[in-house]
Structure formats: structure tokens, C-alpha cells
Length: 398
Image (cartoon, rainbow, N blue to C red; front, side, top):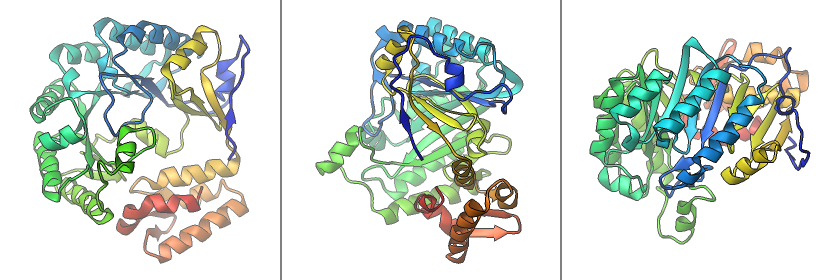
């Protein structure tokens, strides 16, 4: 796999072509939008964002509008996901401008899913009324925990009570409300995690995403762990916490449909399923990664550099990657296997050459024999044991 750094300095570019778009190719069904602003950066976060930079909102939206306009004409999609950063941080007028641009350039089907990530403190009645009126129909709340001490350790800016009120308020407006929870925070106990799950269940949210805390380079927690100021949990305890999430949520009506995601009937995240099915998607904003026409392109991670490039009529794309037919098959297998339903291997295999098919078959046979995968006719999926070590398996397929 070869990633090409984009060093182009030309003043004129065909960004649509650079993104990999071909009029004869498959339609892009989804669009990801990265809003790179937050009030502060939590210690575990290494995402592309700037804290307390309200002065950049207008310049960002100006640049973002230029990038969207490179679509040349409105492109209909089935899902849009606004992530970040914290999209909900935008004040009323910038928010109206942002969503208005998206409604024009990426018209969404009447039955489509339009999601926005939100910080609990932003979920006011005024906020909900505005974004609902402009098309948002799914809210994903980044709560992370209902425990005061854990929220403090994670450097979150809300209290348990504020999180509970934000979820209750959101349910009054949106047909689907999702909640993010983090487990394996420093010093976390099984009892504390059980309390988090219990509260989420009692709030009757429609969707829960559970993520084990990771220590990423570039995040403050990485350096703190290197200096032994904080420690990661033992692997055995982290596994126990993950098992507890599966048991608790599945016993209360949630469908465990992807490694980290649980949904009530009818509330799976359609946008993320586009990724796992290997469908093409648009992406806009700093650090946004799109996948179109067998090509992956990633915008520059730096918000200011993203803005500067566009202001100079330069492409914001920083990396280009043209996938071979073999790479596309391998990625579709791995992303598809993140789903608990697994993949239809017979169908996918029919699209692969014999060398790729045989290579995947060999690794799959080894993992089925080890009890980490289950093969049933044309379908293959992770076993319960395979779920717990899935990240270790993927390198043998990519």
C-alpha cells in the first residue's frame, strides 16, 4: 500500500477528479463532515481540533464552502455525519450557515440519516429546535461516563446530572439518540462501569457506543503514561469490562451489531454501516478522509493549514492513496468483519483473484480452527472469543 504525500502548489486543480470521482462510478451514499472546534482538548484526545478559537469560525466556514462547491453540483446522499471536534459548539448563525450549505450541496433522502455529535453542555432546547428544523434527525452525545470521578479523570467538562438532562432533552426532539461511553479509564473498577451501563439503560437511549480508552501519540495521556503519572488498566480487567458491556446491553434489548456498537431495533447507525460495507463516501473539513472510486484521500490535519490552502486556491488534500483491486477486497473483508453478522465470503471471494482469495482463505482457516471465527456456509463471522482479540487478527488480512 503506497501513500503519496500531496505537495502540489498549482493554483488551479480539479479537486473532484483528485478525490477519485467518476461520473460512471458508483454513487457515494454517505458524507462525513469534520468540524474542528472544541472548548478544550481532553487528555485522551488526539483528533484534529482547536480549542477556544471562535475567531476562526468564519474563515473555516468560508473555506469549507469552497471545498463543498468543488462538488460542482449537488450530490444526493443517504447519510451525513457531523463529527469533530464538537460540531454542537457552533453558535446559532454559524450553525445555520453550515447546515444550509450541506442541505444545498448534499441533499439527503427523505428517509436518510443526518447525525451530529454533541457535547452534553450544548444540548439546550434552543440548540435542539434549531438543528432539528434544519434537518438533523440523529444526535450522538459524547457523554463518556456518569461517574464524577471518572469524568474528572477524563477531563470532561460536564457533570453526571448535566449528561442525564442532555439525554432526556434530546429524546424529546430526535427520533434517534446515541450515547458514547468510555471504559478502561485509569483506576476504573468493574462496579463503576456497571453503574455507567445501568444509567445508560435506564435512560432508554436508542444506541450506545462503547470504546476502550486508548493511549494515542499526540494526546496528553500518552505522555502522562510515559512519565508514569497515569497507568492503563490490566488487559484482563479491560476485557472483563468489555464483556460486561455486551452482557448488560444485550440483556436489555440492545443488538450488538458491531464490535463497539449496540442498538435498539431500528436504530443502527446507517452512516457507519456504509463504511463497514465498503461503500464510497465523501468527506470534508480538516483531517477528513474520503473513499471514492477506489482512491482514498485525506485532507491536511491542521485546521489553519486547511484554511490557508483553500484560501490560496490549493487543494486541502494532504495524502492520496490509490488502492489496488486486491487491497479493496482485503479492506472490505476486514471492515465487514467488524459487524457481528460478518461477511458473505462466497460473494466477496467471487470478486477476488485466486491469489488474494487463497491468501484470505488460509488465514481464515487458521482462525476458524483456533475458534476465533465461525464459518457457516457462505458466511464467516467473529466468534465471541474472536471479538476480544479482533484487532490482533486484522494484520493477517491487510
